[in-house]
Every structure is written in C-alpha cells, then in structure tokens.
Length: 290
Image 1: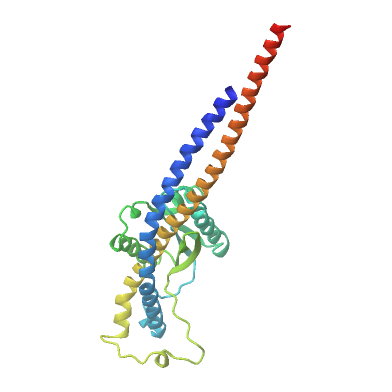
Image 2: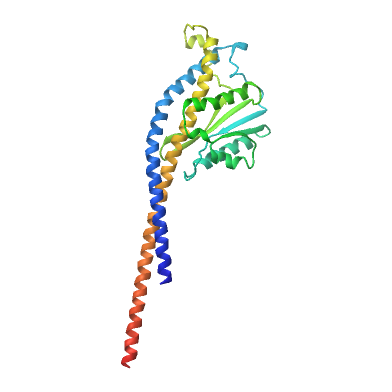
C-alpha cells in the first residue's frame, strides 16, 4: 500500500504542475496576440525610416556626414543583449546569451568588449564572466517609446563620446509563435546603404531637400536609432511570449502523458494488491478447512 500512496502523491503533483503550465500557456497566448500586432504594425515604418536614412547618409560626403555614421578603428565594442526578466520560455534567453558570448569570443576577439544588458536573465549570467556596464530590468514594466528613448540616448552618447567604436544589438526576432530568429544588428555606427557600382545617389533619388539634406539627416537619425531599439525590444517581447507559450504547451503535453502513465501504473499496482489480498483470503480459508 505504501507504493500505491507514493504513486497517488506523484499523480497529484503532476496534475498540479499540469494546471500551472496550462494556465501559463493561456496567459502567454493572450499576451502574444497584443505583442504580435504591435510589432507587425511597427516594422514597415521602422524599416522604411532606416532605409531612407541609410540612403541619405550614403549621399553625404566628407565631414558633412552624421556623427552617428562615422567609422572608426574598432577597439572597444559594446554588445546589448535583450533577454527577459522571467524564465520558463524554452531556449529563448539561452540563445541570446550564447550568441552574445560567441560574438565576444570570436568576432570581436582581441577587442575590449563590454555588455549593456536589457533583461534580468541575461544580466544574471553574463555578469559572472563578462564586464556589464549597466543593466535595465524595469523597462518591461511599462514598455513605451519614451522609456526606450532614454536607453537609446545613453547608447548614442557612449558612441559619440568615443567610449565605444561599435555597438551591436542581439535579440530574438519574432517570426511566429514557434520560431524566433536570433538577430545580430549593428546599432552604431549607422551602416550606409551600398550603391550599385557606377550609380550615384542623384541617379537614385532626384529630390529637393528643405532645409537641407544634412539638417534632415542629423534630426532624423536619433529618432531612427530610438525606433530601431524600440523595434528590437518589441520583437523580443513578442518572441518571449511565443517561446513561453510553446514551452508551456509542450510541458502540459508531457505532464499529461506522465499523469496517464502514472494512473496506469497505479491501476496495475492496485489490481495486484487486490489480487494478493484475495489469494491470502483463499489461502487462509483452505487452511481452516484442512
């Protein structure tokens, strides 16, 4: 009977876990719809703005180019991994941490590499082995453009002051609920669009700029960079909910299979116990008759 009690306790425990994972799956599914709509609506605007500014930056020559587009010898690199504050999302956070470490040890080997972490999970792991200049966990509490703008302005300041020669974002790009793509995106300096050989910007765009091309670029680039970071964080949030929903769906399925297997084992053990009791009763009756 002790074995039966142990199996009953395990069935109760697995059933409780299954209820929790199922509830988490439904919560993530509800949040995913809102996050997915937000990033889907924002991407066309962000992509077009980035494309426009890359084209304008490429057309600026010499010292007239933006301070955010100036290439320098890369000695100091800042990597900005975007993770979440909570776990139970499969490989969502692990993939970002792994990619950030890989960039530091391979692509930027020999350079001075620091991290600016967004999200508690990334900070908890990276700070043990790498220098983290700052961490922001509270951004997800009330995610809006103004909050992200503060971080973007800090990153722009670090670049323009010459503290870092390159800043790279690492985040999960949302594809669908089951698929997230690890994106490595150069934040600063801005990458000018590459024109086809023998083609000039005047051939690509015959526009009249007012007040001037330089002023337009210098005013819009900070907004474009803020939008780029905001898009990356939005992508990460949608990916997190999708990854957690998928992980909790699999966990619920596994818990269901384990519960069913335990119930089968319980029924077999119970039947064996009943059979043994019957045999003992029959054996005792026969002994009395003899």
